[in-house]
Length: 464
Ligand code: ADP
Image 1 (cartoon, protein in one colour):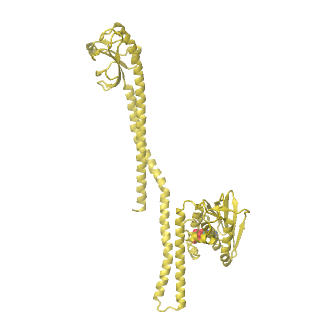
Image 2 (spheres, helix red, strand yellow):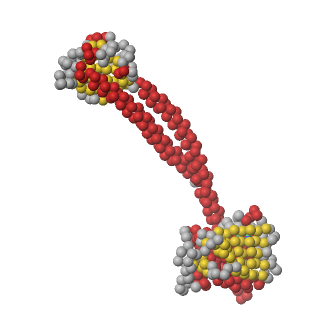
Image 3 (spheres, protein in one colour):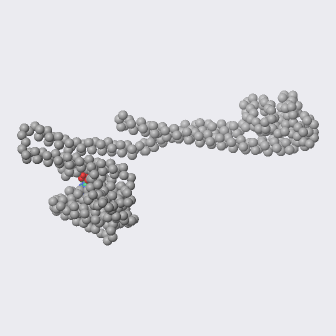
């Protein structure tokens, strides 16, 4: 699968999953809100119904004498009522009565103990079914599908153990209409919200994948560059061997020269492999071991001593400038830190023409150790300054290849600095030299280097 297709497909999948999960969350939230509204309406309606039915029940009960007979006193509480099943079923009560009980949309039904309708009052309903009084709360529907909520209370007093039942109900038309409008808003709003979530997911997935895409491209570039760099010495060695094999007679000096070429290519190859292995190890290294620490004064002095011959050879003046009175320690791997600084100093010597100067200084700044490598060399143009830390990057690849550089020196230096929670900064002007500054956090307590892990052994470890 090619790269564009792979990333497009992954982005699509990521966006779909995100939109799907968001869609489910949105749907559940909408359902929750709807249920909450419905519940609140029902509770409010039930409370009102219960209060009205309770008051009516309390007023009616003392007026009841014989079961099934509605006294005149009771009729006072049932204005505009129809009494008796036949009247009620033909000429059911007219409109709302002015009584307190009927201020809302309520109907009242009085039932005998044998569940016969004795009287009706209040709201006019059409085809509302009779229901058993055994259940105290019920939902009912009339012929025109209007829903009602009904409460049933038994009527009894000292004269009669069970006079009958009182049923009071209210229309849920308003509440249902409101809920219908909420549902409509959800039905219209949900697809719109989902469309918005879909677009946002696509955009977010793109953003989330950008760094992955970049590192994928870097990896591909790295693999291509590594293959290219590894191929160069192998191809050179192969060409040398082929030309020697074609020669019928080899003198001793020819043989020696051939072996020297092969040795050079072999060394180049093994350095490259060591550098690649070190980079891989640094990439995996989460944090430096807190048990190890490194004294920077010794490190700077040792490096200056080690590179004195190289500087002399290039006729470059190499100076050290240690501006600290107290020993300066940092936590970390001495061999790696040695490799970091020596890479910078070698670069500085190599890119400084004869008669130039390289200064290696050390100072402390705000709990940080600062190592500076300054030269008066060729410098680096601003457009290359951000790229020189990339793996295999060389400003002038042909010239730098001749110096033996593979373009990994600064990448390794930066990886080591990061592994030690530090950073490297570069300042340069073309033709006026460079200044590389390495910032490393100072160690809070100094831990001497481990026994048997002296300078030389540990430094070699960085190259293994
Ligand atoms: P190399 O191993 O090829 O030296 P580096 O990663 O060490 O690779 O450096 C990357 C590039 O940065 C080099 O090719 C060189 O052009 C440039 N560079 C590094 N240090 C200096 C310096 N002190 N002065 C000028 N250019 C430098």
